[in-house]
Length: 379
Image (cartoon, rainbow, N blue to C red; front, side, top):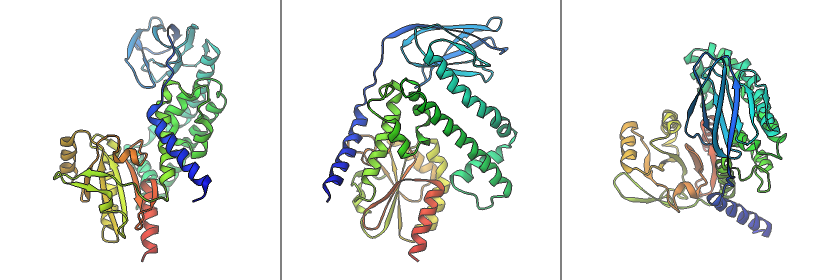
C-alpha cells in the first residue's frame, strides 16, 4: 500500500480517537445583566443557557421592560424569549447589554452586537417563509417531509412546488449560517452555528471550520460538532475497506457476529437505532418496504440497537414487529456504533458481498436509489 495512504488512514483513526478526549475550555463565571424591551403582553420573559439547554428562569416584564441577571461561565450561549415569538441568543459577558427583542436593536459588547446581527439575518428569512408554512395543512406539511426523505409515489405538481419552496428556504438558511461563521472566525460566534447546523455542512466545509487552532475550537458548545466531525472522518476512513467485525446479542440471548453475515456473498444492510429514537421509529415503515422488496434478492437486513436497557429494546421489538434480524450492542469500548463512527441515529451502513463497506451515510431516497441501482444491475 502507498505510504501516503497509510499515513492518511492512521491520521484519520487518530482523529476518531480525539473525539473521546475533547476538553472544553470553560472560562471563569461572571455576573451579567441584560436589560430590554418588548411589545409582548405576557408577564415575563424566559431565560436559559441554550447550548446545551440549561435551567429555565422567568423574569418579569413591567411596562414592556425586563431585566435578566445571573452568573454563568463567560461566553455561555444564553437565550431570552418573551413567549411571543421574539427569541434571541446572547453571549454571557460582563459588559451590560440592552436589547429590543422585537426589532433586535442592541447595545453591548462588539461580539454581542455581531451575534444579534447574525440572528437578524435569519429572522428576515423566517419572516418570509413562516406565513407560507403556517398556511399549509398538516397533510401538506407531512407530504413535504416525506417527499424530501423518502419520495412519494403519488406526488403531485403542488407537492413538487411546495418541496422546491421548502428547499429554497433551507438553502437560504444554510448560506446565511455559512456567512455568519465566515465573518466571525476570530471570535466565539461560529461555535453556535456549528452546534446547531453541523448536519447541513459538506465535508469540505467541515474541514474549513473544524480547526484546533480556531478561536472557538474549545468552546463548550463545540463538544457535539467535534464528535460529529471525527465520526465522519472515521466513516470516510473505513469506506471501501473491509468491514469491522463486532459481537452483539440476539433477543434469545445468543451472541452473533457481523462476520456471520458479512463477506459471505450477499449485501448486508445495518440499521443502527434505539427504542427511544423518534426518527428511528418513524423510519420503520420505509425500511420495511425496502426489506420486503429486497429480502429475496440477496440483501440481509440487520437491525442493531444501542439501547442500554435490554427490556426497552425487547418491548420495542414486540411493538414494532421488525421482520429482520435484530441485535443489541449497547455502548461500550468496542460497541458497533463506535467502530463505525456513528454519532447519530438512525444510521445505515451498507456492505458489499465481498465484505467491503460501500457507504456509511445512506438514508431515505438516497438509500432507496442505491439499492435500486445495485439490484437492477444484478438482474
